[in-house]
Every structure is written in structure tokens, then in C-alpha cells.
Image (cartoon, rainbow, N blue to C red; front, side, top):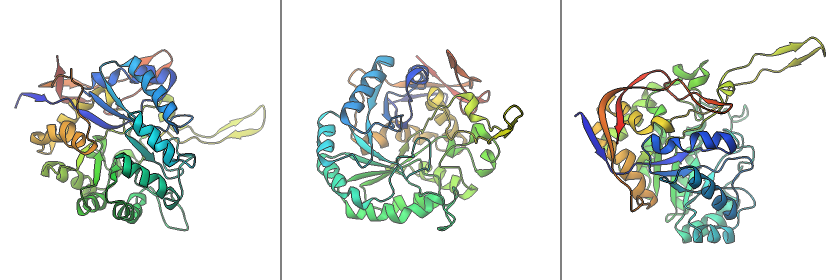
Length: 357
């Protein structure tokens, strides 16, 4: 196979940031082959109201007119059933749940789901989607670390799915065999997004390597194999959600502690930011990876069909297919605009597919 034509692809998990960073990365969504983009609400401040989501959507639309931006609200104590109904009336598709402190800009995340049951009931009635960052916070008391945080979350997923059988729920950026098996065992109201970087990385690839560090972290060989297997199987409830998350290049580098002689003070070490940027190369990257493990025949299902069916979102009326050719394609070293420099995933590496007009 040397050419592929795809129905308009959709990315059901993308971070587009704010201000100058958003100006840089938002136009690159269509460059990466994506027509529909589910936008994450963990901005600063987070998108907690319908009015904020509509304003953000308008800003993004001004930067990328050919992209269909699908908006979400940040699950927080201020979110009410009344706001859910207002959101649905304004075309807001979902609500995103972040457990407190597990990833970038999640300090305002939730600690208990039960208090939000009235919100979930309203979402069920309005046919909205609950998007779950499926981890629990690390704690010595519970024995949770970044390596088992996702698996420890799965009983909560099971409870939510069975408590709200008509609420569409998405387990975002799955990284473990346990999560894949759990989603497959649950009814059709539960779907699951998979990132391209979790189809490539394992724990050895990010330990000590800031430019491969993301949350949830990549796990073990058997976990990566499970993600690949479910795509190779063509399971209809698993689909692309890139979790493309740009950070300034400087923030992806670990910073050692510094001693300031003038003040006799020590500046503490700074860990690198969690997140990988893939939007600009997304669909060619997916083709490259799926081909590498024998799933290229399921590329269109993974990037174009399955997620749209689950979210019930069609392409825009004027959308056109995306065409790929088998051709060497070197991932840029960086993307820049003004003072912003973002290093993409697999920077400088060769992938085997390219978009053609």
C-alpha cells in the first residue's frame, strides 16, 4: 500500500493552551491532518462555564477556520445541572474530570465522584460525554505511584459505568492492559482513547528523558502490546485521542538545584513538564505506527470512524478526505513562533507517511 485516503480524521483529546502558545499550535492541528478536535479545558484558569467555553471556541476558530473544535467543561464544584443544560444548548459536547494533582493544571481536580452525581444525571439527560483522566493520585498511604495509578482507578470506572448506563463515558489515554480489558468488559456506553505515543513508548523510554515524559506515563511491554492488539482487532470503542500537549522547550528539561551565593539560598530542582506535542504530525505518525505493528488496515477506523461514532460527531459538510502517501517524512526538530519553542514527539526522526493535498 503506497497511498491512503481517509475520511476526515478526528482527535478526541487535544490541548491547545492560551495566548502565544495557542497562536503557535492551533493552526498546526489541520497541518497534522485533523478536521475535528476535542479541546481540553485545563487552561489557566480552567474552562468551567459555558460562556468561557464559547469564548475559547471562538478564539480557536479564528486561528484555524478549517477545524471543527469540540468543547468540554472542567468538572469542578461550581458546575451545576443548570450549567450542564446551558452547555448542551450551546453545543458543548462533554465534561472533563481530572483527579487532583495528577497532571498539568489539575490542582483544582476532584477528590470524590459521588458529589457530582446530579451533574452526571443531567449529562445523561443531555446526551453529553464524561471524559475521564483515569488515574488516582500518588500516595504512600495507598501505595499508589504513577505506574499503578491507572489500574487503581478502574473500580471507580466500573462503578460510574454501571451507575449511569446511559451516560457516555470515555477513558482517556489508556496506558495499561488492565484498562483495555476493563473497557472491553463494560457496556457500550464506555469508550476509550489511545495516544500515538503510548503505542510507541514504554517506561524505559521516558525514565530520565524529559522529551518523552507525559502523564499518564507509558508502562510495560505487555501494556503497550495490549494497546496495539485492540487497534489491530479493530474494536469499535477504541479511537484516537492524541493528548497532544505542548510545553515550552525549556520546561521539558529537568533543572538541577542552584545555589545563589548573593542570598545564600538554594533554588529547588524543577521537574520537567508532563506532555508530548504531536498535533502537527498526528495522522502521518499514526499511519507510521499502525503500519509498524500490522494494523494499517484499521487506520481509518482508529482515526476517523470509531471516535466519531462514539461521540456522535460528523465531519463538517465541506470537509474533504485526507490523503497520505508512503514517503519518508522527517519530523521537524522544533516549531517556533515568537519566543515560543516547542519540540515535537520523535523530533528529527523519520516516519514513513506524509500528507499530500
